[in-house]
Image (cartoon, rainbow, N blue to C red; front, side):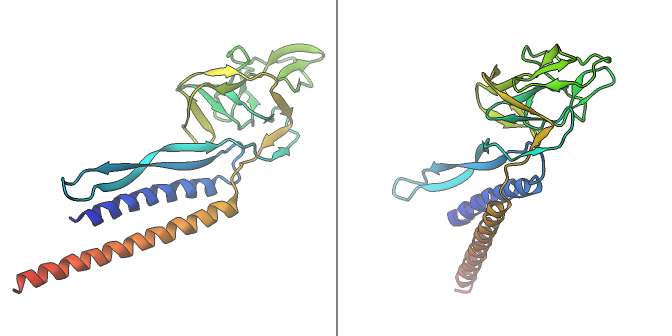
Length: 237
């Protein structure tokens, strides 16, 4: 196989992975707390001989996330929470601690503040938050303090990662480097943060990637035809 086909195959593989990222962004346009994903590619250069040009190919090296805040939509839900500014809610899951900006919470049968799938929302001290069964008219202040009838019963923790983030699900991240509390975080009760995906920009990017993929496919077909013609010419000599 020629170097040009190897190079084009590497490019096609990268474009396919980028198309998957763009398609996932579009699919999560209406997902609360979703952050736009961007594929990051790295170039690999390999020597092909002392007197020949080097071979350069690209590959997916990782992801970056646009953490720009999405539009805040007021829902009126008592345990719907949105963060104004930086930071994440911390969750206790079966796989360890996770971070999220999706704040659609509820009270479990055990009286704990949880997500829809049962992950426990953590306090500023990284403990599950317990809401007493007798608590009525629960209010959550801007600093995350939870009160009922004038009595403080807990505080929602807001954290920021100290290292790189890795996406686990559409709205959850892993912070391998640990987390630290955010000073002066602002929490809004009765609101959710919308996805920060721009459908127009993502559709434009999808068209751009699709056209690049088609161009690569055409190049591979032309190269394959050139090689076939060369083989036929040599065989018929």
